[in-house]
Length: 270
Image (tube, rainbow, N blue to C red; front, side, top):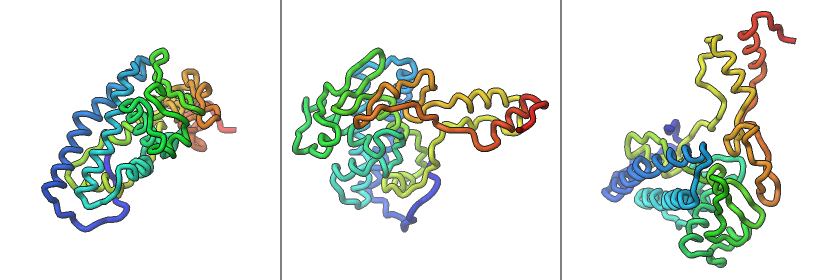
């Protein structure tokens, strides 16, 4: 990923020793910790081979990502509590996903603290427990290679719905200089909305038309990224409501006609 724009351009920042150190620490954290964790978890999720301790390990790393970003923001002169940063994290740093919109890091942080303290402090996490019910280290359970999250009115694949979207939002950035890190840490950036639509084909190469047609007619689920026949979302529950398969994309108007005409010259649009 790359930063493609600035929402509110700011004057050139004075790079203090503390700011340089925090920026370097964050870049190394992404490169040496988050990116390998993402690649490892993606591989295990594809095979449905995630162990419970592995999910807790990734969850801990993501919870600590808040601290690394807050260190950059603090050195940049932004004063805020960690709690306030967690509250706005998903929206500020583009953590995508249809379910649990803008609430993933809040749950990641809560699960991490539940593991550390066995159960959450109900007073400290009142708003979280009002939403999810009691959270403990037993809220995550391993089931046949998936790590499921079981809460009062929720039941879902924790890695696919929460961990991977957060990892993808925070890793893969090409920070060329400290100003790039600052744009990201401030939330002063624009990103293209992620899309699963197949875009690796040359639109002028008719020999790929069949492959394109297959992909367009078999989109993955935008919630779990699995195909319709592998999607488990109908078995999951979010705020007491059953989930369902939601195609990540649909063909644009005329797109199927164009591909069919490339596949068969005798095809005529109705």
